[in-house]
Length: 307
Image 1: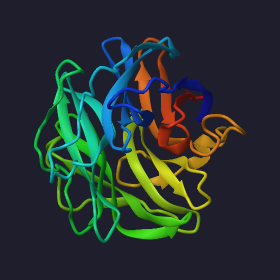
Image 2: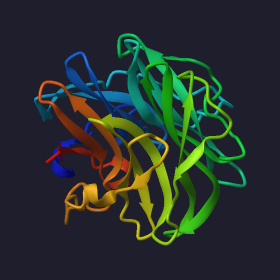
Image 3: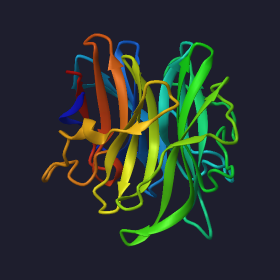
Image 4: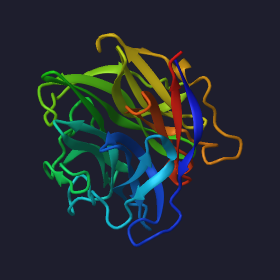
């Protein structure tokens, strides 16, 4: 199997009061006959809120709707873990409702920031309610600064979850940047998690300084985790791990061997924040991703070639 890069989909070019720039951290679901892509929308102070764009499942380059009236998820109250920004981690449909897992930002004093995981739920896809003002994925010994970017799928009565953990910063590309790895755990709830998971993908410090915002998905009969790769050369890219049983995982980035940064296009420096969605009308898997500057230049997509 290989992912084949197809086209740029969308770029935000008409700023308003709360959405000045960016289509950060896209996460896509199939919802009521459309591909709904939740994104992080930045204001003039670079603080992100969550909104969405709807795509035509038969032609993802055809934009059906841009939700630019109000964000579906605003920043948290003062003092909360998400007071300085929220962006999508993973959206998934569980029991007919959208679980919008998200990452919350809070600035630090002796470090740059903290990232922990929240959850908001919607029955209609537009009105979301936080399950709590505190993180559902909070600080633990395995992740003191970063424990977020969670992705959850339901299988029978259990929930398979992946997320990022980090407790260090590293000086890369002229500034301090967080470094993190990917963890996995099974749980009996989509809202409550153990204090410690099992690390399944470790950052290769010789070429990367962080593996972030993982997504777990089952494609046919195999499990995959897609994640961001923060590269030391600053040409940010995406990565993949696969498993037959969710116990033994191996990295397999050869699936992206046909995907390259463009020479001068919107994704010349970043192919980032992968999110895979299944389209029943075409029986295809699509990968939505953001381009340069964490999505300032827009989002694009790739298609899975399973042969």
